Length: 319
Image (cartoon, rainbow, N blue to C red):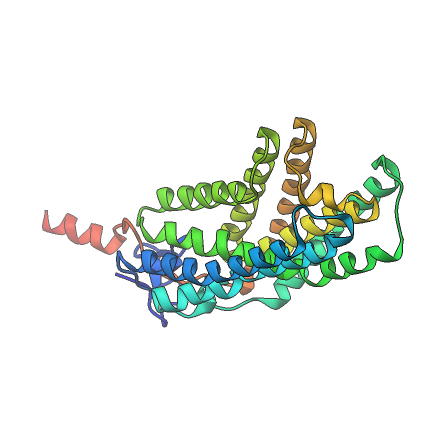
């Protein structure tokens, strides 16, 4: 049995249960071959954008000089933004479901909640950026003119870049994994672990602490998606995390170091996870306090329906 468009109210709690985000494509209706077809379509479409990135990087020549960093940053952002159409077309053409089903259980972007989550993220982590810039950072702040374009790209392209990564990993990858398993615990666990592992590996060569930090970030973004029923909060927090990190790097003239980072110490990795984890918890509390009542998740037939009182009485009478 699957979810259908009219099944939006909880109904009998002994028969229906809320759909969880990783199982949304399965609830809408999925055959065994649909996840594989979606992955194939995603690979074909996104492979084209990677070829464009490679051509652009080759045009810059071997190595990336400091004066070429804005161009490299632009190409990197555009390649990751390419994850947006690749992921949404994979769902539309692979599963033959609305592309918006990748955004949330309500098959659309909740723009108001996205903006509120982003604002809450800034309130949670913005002061830490200022603290790092003016009190902790060992490098002098550089406000020269060549910093303008990296800052502009960071403010306007980074949200799209982070949206692309969330659509691909917390969205498509999680829902593909969830399509294979009806059992809720297994589906949720694997849809958190596998995309987070892929997300960390996607960043290239790195040492243990940095891999742990990125894997942990993937888990936190996945947890937010699971708890809020959509990608909005994860996109907001991911955007804020990248903006604070790279604004710090730009203003302290360490952009190249930040883009090609391959190692950090254990203290830095653990502190970053704790800070982003705190921000994730604050965002979730904001959702619980002001948003949850507005967004009733769709329900589908319960995995193990609980017998109703009437059924129990009927069986007792028959016995």
